[in-house]
Amino acid sequence: MYIDVSLMVEDGMVHYPKDPEVIIKQFSSIKNGDAANNTHLSFGTHTGTHIDAPRHFYEDGIGIDKIKLETLTGECSVIEVPEKYEAITEDFLKMQNINNGGRILFKTKNSKIISRDKSFHEDYVYVASDAAKYMVEKGIILVGVDYLSVEGYGKGHETHRTLLGAGVVIIESLYLEQVEPGNYKLIAFPIKIKDSDGAPARVILEK
Image (cartoon, rainbow, N blue to C red; front, side, top):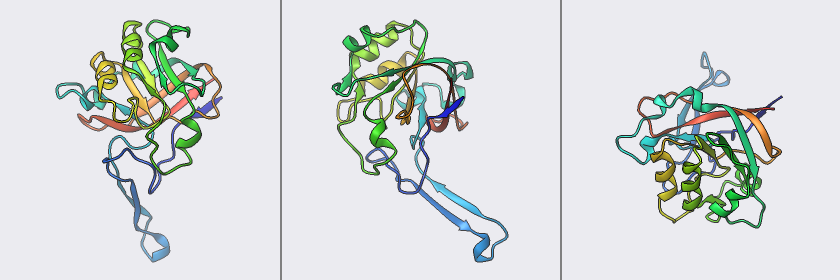
């Protein structure tokens, strides 16, 4: 069974503050007498469900086109975070069964709003910097979250820099509301944009 955990990219969808808004417009249409339907897309590389490359926070970091496909596909664990948590912390992670070298997707209360609300919520659940350091120590190779950023809003960039600096791939804006916690096969392929800091992706779980 395949589960699509990607957001639908659509005109006017929620985006991170100061990022480009999402604009999707037809510039030719059959109903208007044109020979074919054709659409213009305008949005940032961190739109909808997307993958961050090290280049996002490191000038000399690799771009999205250089991330190994072996990292983007393979076994992963979906960990459910109880609603009482405002952040994913090291203490929380130490209560989980985290495998060295694994991939982790965090299902939080964010998933209840990310697909429905076009307004940006500043109080989303995020990955605290101590949790990021702990996952690096455990050899985690990929981390996924269910809101627009792995980092807390207005809390600096330590989480991003810790993960990306260690080569940990970050997937943001997953939609996990209907996904049960447990083990899956992850398939996550971004658009192949040369030297890009990130790119939208189609992300699938196989049970």
